[in-house]
Length: 87
Image (cartoon, rainbow, N blue to C red):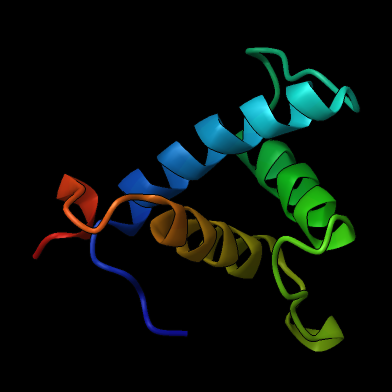
């Protein structure tokens, strides 16, 4: 998978937005001590379950690919003029 420009920042935003989504759904709450990997996997699996994103192929299901998928997801949610989407 091709790495996105500002992927780390997009992932951080995806975890923030994803945590809000998870809490609004009422399925979980994240603690400050939860790892970014655990949050990313949980948010990814919930978004796949809710059919918000396309699932990865079974042999591609790993945390780095899940994080990349979340970065792509949040990039689509951001307005076109958002600083993270600029070169």
